[in-house]
Image (cartoon, rainbow, N blue to C red; front, side, top):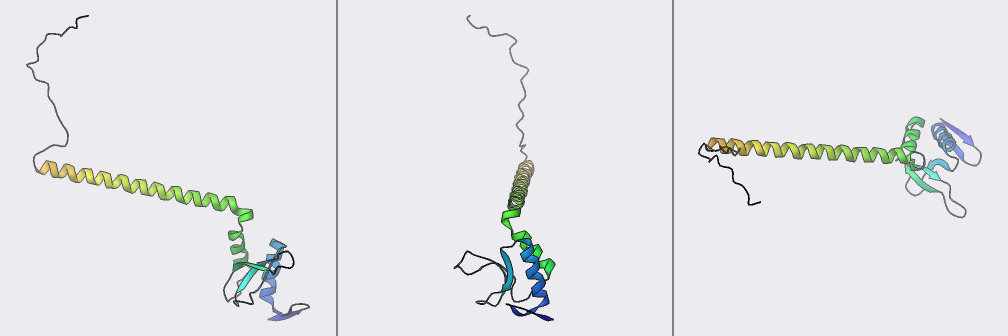
Length: 144
């Protein structure tokens, strides 16, 4: 369904609702179709004489209000920058933990294979030294 808005002409009601939601989120933003690409985008108003700049694209289909606001909030680094940074750091820490775990597992498996190989050939990976009973009981004294 389309409605007529003075200054904008005939506008789809979904486009109008998304535009209102985006403008309510930040007064510098608005939702419109990019004239160069035909994609629906969120634009930021630039100081005059600059043209509005597209900051978030949605492709050729108009998203629902909820989908547009969700993507806008996820991409908003001014308001959620610290949260995005924390998520990146956490994912890097998880990756490092997994990498360390895999490295430890590979080391343990290598040690087990080596131990199995040595035992098959009658060797022991553990060095065992026994003290002989023939050790003299004399205590060596220093010259001091």
